[in-house]
Length: 355
Image 1 (cartoon, rainbow, N blue to C red):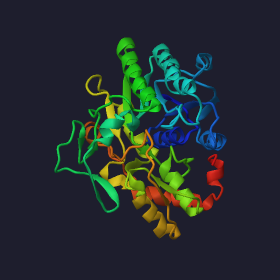
Image 2 (cartoon, one colour):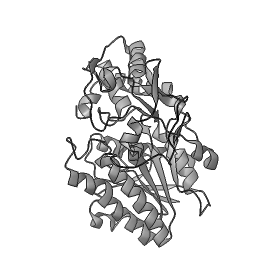
Image 3 (spheres, rainbow, N blue to C red):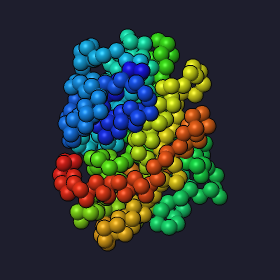
């Protein structure tokens, strides 16, 4: 099988490439990357040593895709992943559109030309912010939890949030681009007869990720705690009760492999993938883990509210488990320990992340 990965030198693209090379004998992997992000050159060397052909190019430019090698499948892992993109740093709103949506059309045209299947990596941030804010929650063990004694909206249960949960605006400009990408990918596949899978991913995390407060929060928090940087619990009373789940992109690679090798031609094409309830924790719980690992370091309380912040998101992997037998294998403690060891071995990681 011939595979093309966009954004191959990013944390997710590179880890997925490694996982798939281990899972699929005879896999040929090529990737395209603009090499603009911190660490891209380091990842390029690592991938080249594994036999990945890395091509320097920008998928926003249709001409940069003209000379790419033909592929049987394309994994779209290229995006500006910050929920604040377009509204607070990280480029303009027009640049966000070009990075996340206009570029996808170029990739879909590549799939159309080469009759290649596509796996599009989407995001949990496509879900409605007001609907998430309205979830019935209660506090226990320094974290928000669903209050299952109250009526829950469609698409949410103690297992987490599934693909039927509301995507009504506002979802953020970033979330809006990813939701539009989902629709365009599925429409292209239906119109031009090539297979498309869409995976709404929860927080992807692991050692080697360039973490910042608005993307890569687990890596950022561990590194910042170790360095005794100023940390803040922002919003929701300034207590750090907000909860997210996390999983490693190597686990995601197993799901993508199952999808790309599936013979199924109909039925569900959109799936949710994340750490699930077993791999979920609040910021306060994450800080307690860091306290036990590195020594006490107390964050500041900051009760100001921000428009894109959400109190609780945990992904429900039930559909992926039923259809592909998939579940994340790397536990949250293993994931955090990997980040911690990497942080100790790379004392300049925050600076290399641009912080």
